[in-house]
Image 1 (cartoon, rainbow, N blue to C red):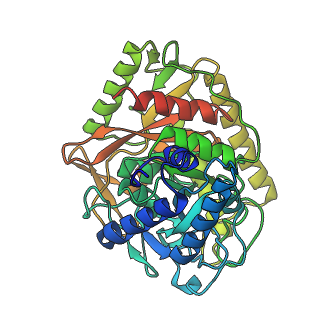
Image 2 (tube, helix red, strand yellow):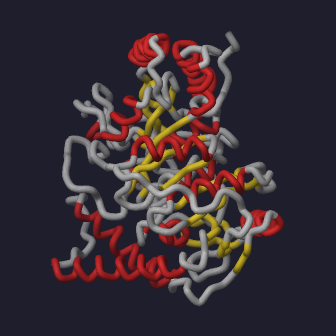
Length: 439
């Protein structure tokens, strides 16, 4: 047998199916990597190795019986906020540190049904509400590229575990960039699906249940775009259309780096422009402006109002002014108009290419988000501005992928955000794959 290696999820499943390795060997190799590499990173904060070993042995028995499953024997971890029966779900809150989930989330159920082996859960910020993953229950997660830097949030431990090579697949959630920002800061792939595509059941505030939260989605992170596509198919509630493009030739791409949303570091703009030029050489049509592009700053203000309203509804301590029912209906109407505006844009373009954020991973900070500043091109700017880039896709419920495209002068990853039409999730992921292959 070939020694287990850091394969992608698809490569791992194929190698197990062919008998080149085994689920048990891959499980042990992933456990060894976690034990070896996670001391300084602190990504996998809840470990479930004994049950993982049992599941791996059972997977090998199923493989011997020629039972085919797309992720049979593939070791992975999952964001702490997803319920896994028998494991804590705290959302990084000390008040919830003793809560133990009694049932797997639907996403976990579907991943297990596909044969995945869950090794444990990865770190988050309190209430999933920061772009750094540090909480009083599990402590701080550090970026594998530079331990003095953040990993992003709220799926920060997810991206760190991937970037450190501990596991090939992860699953997070996203309402304010919580998949895309960690993927961006850690140099891995991440997908925020179209709103409502992947179920939120079992991704509840500890000890509660209820309706899906407006704006919020769950989505995969991986070290390859192909793994994103597979994980999406395995967990989604609907059959999404396949990609409209199989090559960059004739793709129509709108590049957006200069808006009223937030300024962007020159290194990120340069990396995006270089990527756009490579796309153009591969046959894509590149535009940098369009009359169909909505007023992004206006839509961002509407997004913030809806986001803060949604969060306040779940927080009894919040003093954010809540709308009455007609006021909420007006907010939903505005959101629907925004989606229609973008759908008109996507009759002319296959995707928008833009930053995930204006900087690469920033240094750890104890300053609250409301008071935090970031240095962009040598200028101090308010941290909250940076949510403008992720709101482009989140507010209208569009799919968006983060794909790594380079590094800055400090060796920190630079990611590209690829935004597509509603339910064009596979087009977005395919573009991430094609752009990733440009080198």
